[in-house]
Structure formats: structure tokens, C-alpha cells
Amino acid sequence: MTRSLHWWTRDSAGPTLILPDGCLDVIVRPDGEAVVAGPDAVARESAGAGRHVGVRFSHGLGPLVLGVPADELTGRVVPLADVVGRDAAAGLEAGSAPLLAEWVRGRLATVHDDDPWAPAAFAAAAVGTPVATIADRTGLSARTLQRRCRVRFGYGPQHLARVLRLQRALALRRAGSPWAAVAADAGYVDQPHLARECRALTGRAPTLL
Image (cartoon, rainbow, N blue to C red; front, side, top):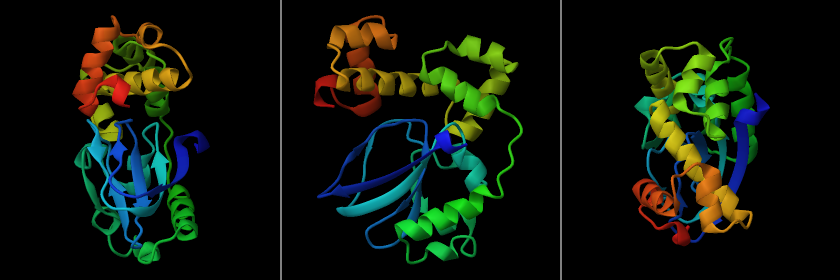
């Protein structure tokens, strides 16, 4: 389960472009307010300057921790208390990194998930496995996979695959690969296909990311 958690801190002077990644975050803002940032279908700009401290839940873990379907939070940023209830969020009223860590540990202690399909599906999509193959491997029909993906990731398997392919492409580019090689290695038809998908998901050309 630890691979499904990523702790992060961001110091920003203003709005920051947040790229979709199929994950859900609990964030403590500079003013101490704790919020939930649901899975983003497309890129969005974060609000406000200052230090943000957060934990990112991937592989479908977030909805289990928060007790709410991911698709109820897709594209939304809402107060944590509105999601888990004021009593459950009370420990983070004056949020900080240590308090957030303590809160997460407490929530994880209540999580029980004996069905490995979600982390397996996420991991497979992250390396470019076709959606039909993911369905076969998990033993789910296309309709059931669609429904379950919306609950755990915020959108269906096709969109999850697009989002994770873009993340894979940007990681290759950051590692130094030229754009033509990035497009081929990440699974795009060609470089123009990569450019179209990048604009569709982020509103920007690949070179601006």
C-alpha cells in the first residue's frame, strides 16, 4: 500500500498548472485549511501562493481512505470536512504536515481492500497495457470495468489510459528523450498525435510543459 502514497510539499509564488494523473490528494493549504483535490480529467490551475503540503493517493486508494467514490470528486477541490464529515476532519482544523501524517495513518488503519483489481489495473494502464487486456486480466466485463474505474479513479479506463500515457510521455521527455522518440515509446501513433493529446488534456503544447 505504501507505493500508493506520495507525500509532497510545494512552495509557489502563484497559480501552478496541475496535470491530470488519475490520483486524489488531501492538501493542507498555507492558511491551514485541509482540502480534497479530486482526480482531474484535464489540467487545472491551483489557487494561491505559499507552502502547500499534501499526500497523493494513487492506484485507487484515495476513495477507500475517504469513503467516497472518486467520480463524486472528479475535477473538484472541496473542504475535507465536506467529504469525511466535520468530526472526522477535526484533527486537521489547524492543519500541518505532522497532523496530516497522523490523520492519514489513522484513516489507513480502517482501510480493508481484499480485491487487488484496482491497483493492478492502475499499474497496467501506467505501462501502456491495452484496456481490453486489463479487463481480461482482472476478469471484468467492459461495462463492469468502466463502472469500477469511475468509482476508484474518477473516470473510465480509456481516459485513465490517456492520462497515464501523457504522464509516461512527460517522464520520458524529462529523462532526455527527443519528442519523436517520446511519442513512439509512450504509445502514440506519431508526434502530432502526442501534440493533440497534450493540448486536449492540458490546453498546452508539449513544448510548454
